[in-house]
Amino acid sequence: MTTALARPEFDVLSDDCEPHAFQGDRAMTAEMARELDCTSLFEEIVGASPPLRAVLSHLSKVAPTESTVLITGETGTGKELIARAIHKRSPRSSRAFVSINCAAIPSSLIASELFGHEKGAFSGAVQRRQGRFELADGGTIFLDEVGELPAETQIMLLRVLQELEFERVGGSRPIRANVRVIAATNRDLQAAVADGTFRADLFYRLNVFPLDVPALRERRSDVPLLAEYFIHRCAKRAGKRIRSVTKETSKLLQSYDWPGNIRELQNVIERAVIVCDSDTLSIDARWLSGRPLGTPSVASLSTGTLATHKKDAIEAALEESKGRVSGPFGAAARLGVPASTLESKIKALKIDKRHFKPASPFVSLARDVPQEIRELDRRLE
Image 1 (tube, rainbow, N blue to C red):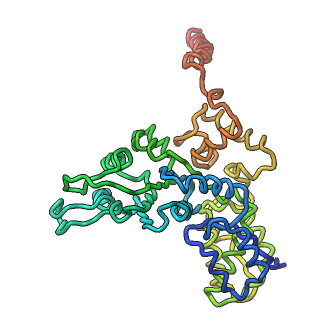
Image 2: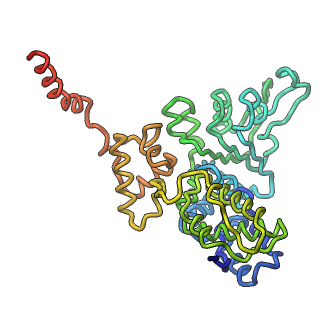
Image 3: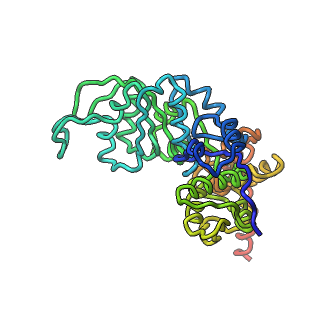
């Protein structure tokens, strides 16, 4: 059985989405075009789901300001797209938007990449070179995967945020930094601060205005809409015309947790379109390499019909972790969600984490005393 591709109510949040490209798609009906125009909120970002609208509401308020923004969320959720939307809605929109992935550059070169270097500053520095901060002068710099910065570069970034100036590597002259900083990470920076791998003062400087981008499993009802958007987009590029999807594929898309989020969904759809030999699309379940299908995910906290169900799951995890949220043995790890996401849910559901922490180390010790006494009595018999 197949499911016809009906009018999509697009809700797109991906780093490389191009919703406006549909304007010239002949396969797209006039009604679909009107729907796209009506739901489009921030150019590339399209949709009306409550989690997305919550993010965009905060985005619209912070964009006109000069405040530093820290975007958190799992990989593949579209953090750079959010950063670009902030820039485009800011007074700096006519100036440069400079993006750098801090995890993709060797730690020995990251300082030079960010702040530039003078001639002779190190082996191979044959001439003066401007860094990303200078290139972003008057505009916005986006520091993706900021949690991967080495300790010495964290200190240099902290100076930029505090004093609005920096020095090139090997230089002695301070350079003013007229740049707005937007950072993003899929790491739990609070846990990194607790572990000593990320500076607490830098975290608080970056975390002026936090934005948490929801995972796709937290927008499960949007999966068919997103899938339909990608089907139209990929089919157009491949020169194919796909009119429907199989019923099995529809169920498959809805039951899967999408650990890679929208990026994974897009890749799976693109693969399906490439191998499709008819006007009906189907997906091979073996392509979905994450959580087994049909197994309910504890991480899908927001898909429950009642808030109490989410609360019970969170409280159970906190009970097992003795009130700890982050870390390898924390509640977030047990639930399979980022600690920042769990913290926001704990706050929204008004859960008191202190209730689950041991009142005193002497209490747990006292509980073991009777057992120790019984063991001693047994040995003396």
